Length: 436
Image (cartoon, rainbow, N blue to C red; front, side):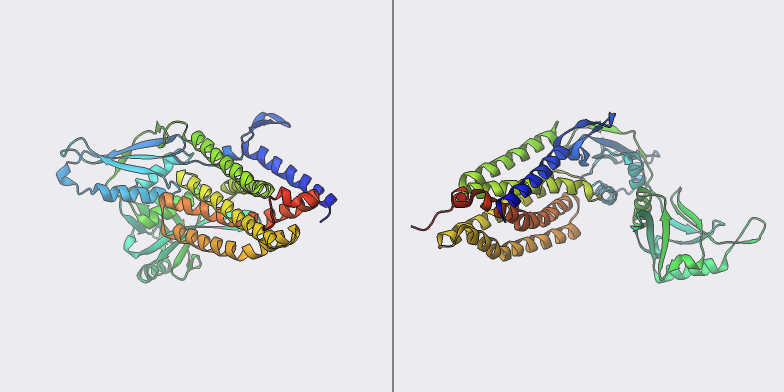
């Protein structure tokens, strides 16, 4: 690569990095529409209740039932509510059981992040009653014992996304449903009509629609939903059923972040301070190579923030921040391996260019092995863990992939760009020394 190409590439990369930095951190009025404000990538990240102001709901028994007449297990209700809220995307929701004294029934306080669907989601999580499947005449077919599970799925075709609930039945359940469809239904006057399946949970009707044999595939029924939230809620209610008792949900109350006031801002400044420390150490120890490492780490941070917005379903909490910081440290460590190898190669007699090339080639296997192991670790944690651990697995897993790409490709491009710019002073710029 000659000097002109290096300068041209450096200008392009600098412009891209500046644009990314502005889009990530800056807030400004749009020049073509001065009534709208661009909020930055950081402003678009969805934060959990430990970092941002959330909402709280109180759940109390709707009917005045004496303690002796109830068999409420508070720990079981807490776990059920937390599990349901997590399935709806509230990984950091906290549920607390309380009562004034032993003569009072248990009530529950739910603290969760604020969202446009929070009121509806808490009502879904607190829904009660038995799951029942009936025909158009209200004739009982079967209950939850015939359901093997339900899950939300989405399908995108030609830029159009459709949302479904896949309802899976046991062998007995699908047989009963097929027999009911074959028998059909009758109206109030006794005339034959199409079969209608109705699904209810307690007093709430979850689904009602005409069905034919064509709607069934194997042991499954695919239900079309109007939007993603409706599909997620329907799948949850069918899969988990209802609580044993009906609870009245209070109006939402605003609560401060679990980590204290201005938690998000303080975490941001702490992360910025950690990044600055990494940059100072890298530049002071490795010189120009440290500067290349710092620019690579900066691109890593920008791409990680972009991925928090692009990848659906990510709600950032403190565990997610820890995942990003861990991936940033991994990036710095990978760059340190390369820079140390670069020094060793130059010390053993190679030219600067040969030392740079050999350093990246010989470090690739080590870095790839480390990143592969950590990527597998993130996947295992994602599938086996829930709550905060799940968010850590997501941000750290994404960070491992970005770190590998930035370290092995982007930083190598920067290193090759630096050589023509400094020519005979390259070894001084990279702080390389021959062995004495």
